[in-house]
Length: 234
Image 1 (cartoon, rainbow, N blue to C red):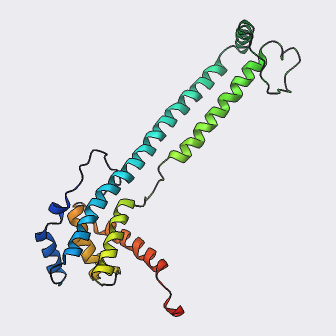
Image 2 (image 1 turned 135 degrees about the vertical axis):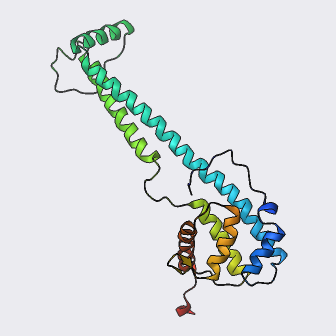
């Protein structure tokens, strides 16, 4: 399942996704009595939360991709102009820049260029060198911006799914008084918690895979273990 989310996705209706009939079926499959009104209300709130986080995280990634595309295009433009500049007659550019500066009464660049002669410092050469220096700096700035805006490669955390599973873990442990554990072996989740999460999540995200659910559950289990009180200190 892709992490890419369209801003135009309509919010899910909790009363339809997790109707009373659906929730009764889930409780029956788990061997539970019908869920209480509190559990039903909290489970439906996970649907609303999922729609909210789907929009937030999806928009964030879309914004990063758009920024990356913009910076990439800008960097290409700067690089092309630097190449074009180097292909021109440098003496003509120096002369043209000097004439333009005199015409506008522009100040000489403050950057010190010790490699040029005293005469070159008066004939417009500093303007050309300053232009090249700033273009080089601008090109490097776009490279840094690209690094910051780029979406990381490889497996990306599915924050939307993790937020959903995190809430389901709360319902399972705090409202249903069950242990939230995962024991995934040979393609099958072997804990009631996994079955609970799978049954609910598949109603909210029909194309979800078991592997995605397991990955998210392992992340949340690890989080909860880090914050659990140390029994040895009791």
